Image (cartoon, rainbow, N blue to C red; front, side, top):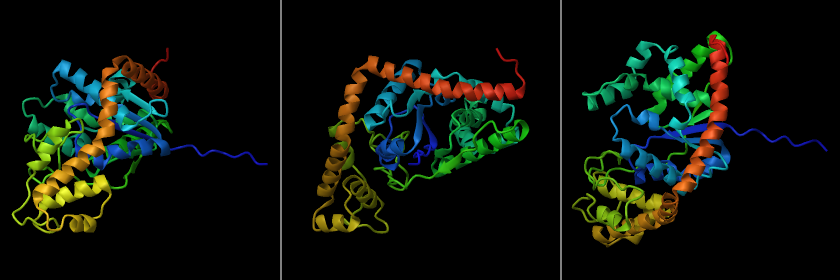
Length: 336
């Protein structure tokens, strides 16, 4: 009987910054599907704390937010035994390879990056070199793990393109050192808009705290935000042009309950917006309840979190250091 060959899972890499608590939009748009993604790919999930310091961070707050975000990743259902769940700064190879790749990245390429232009405008008092060379570190993050695929949204495609360009340039000089990654466009999750300005995407950095629901918000806070959500004067729950607020609430309710827009319109026919807002709030609270219960358990067990991220760092470093060593040898550095 012929021996069955198990096909190697493709490796994927996803990093998230610890600068603020993810929103309901982040959760429904991507994060909710990460445990399923982990079953189908050889996954590397990480917290990009090195990237976060291109903008000034308060040290104690950065430590706290990084710890909380790690607990959130576990509470989502990511299994640190099944894949790698680590903190970027725990693996020095990220910074080391980033410097090497800086020397194979053109000034003109970096100056064309839209994120540099946007963040420079937002933080005009701190346009630092790290902000400019940010794509080289992002390329190092990906190439260290020989990632086959990188899940990306529309706003990140440019960064993956420069990563591919750097990898191909390096490989063209030294041979096949890095896997050239492909973009993985996940099945589109719900696109969730601000509760206060439904023409804009729900954002972690929304200056209006009522506009965003954060995944660790207390149930009473969540309900209060939905009750104050912007709607229109029509008082009819149906999807339509000029009804951005109701359209957004229907999208959220549908994403959480699985109900179609037709079902929602039928179930809330003749009912006011107050009833519908309350129903959406209750559905979101119920959706987040299992996650929040697990999160509250993990965040109290700092010893377990430390055990997990140390194990994650060891597994990540094993792969990363092999890639770094190969690249350094190819360039011509004397090996220890």
